[in-house]
Amino acid sequence: MASKEKYSTVERRVKKKDKEGNPLKDTSGRYVYETVAIKYRVDADFVPSEIGQICGEFMDNYIDANKQGEWFVALLEKTEPKKVKEKQADGSEIEVMKNVPLSFMSIRSEFAKKFFPNIVKSSSSDNESYRVKMLKKYKK
Image 1 (tube, rainbow, N blue to C red):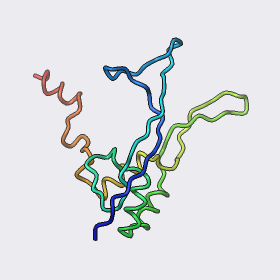
Image 2: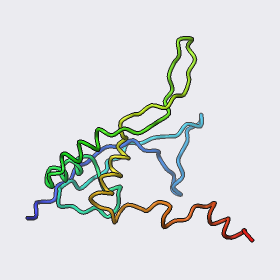
Image 3: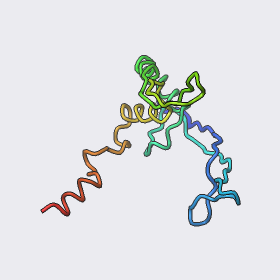
Image 4: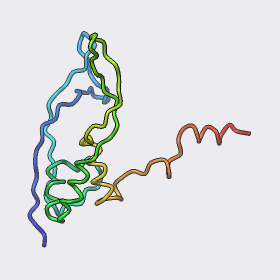
């Protein structure tokens, strides 16, 4: 059952870049931003080839079509520890660890791991860390 391809355009604010791909800065040293329109394919039949092709609307359509709502709700209810700044009564700020809802990037990553594991780059299992590579090279 193939459905018609659907696309969605999302506007994102990104750092403006020069011809070589380096971020541009203004005279005061701040980055210059521009708004770009990014076109995503959002129909549930789409199979992304990289994680950057997954947007929120695609996840929503895919979850509906494949009846994975319970799994998705459980994912959305998860939290992750994060350092946040809190003001104290005397006006000073301290960093504390708090459990916060998952970021969009974490949700998208978990979604890709479950439904499209071939596009998720493996972590340290396949790719050795710089430290491990240097130890192998220089250890006698």
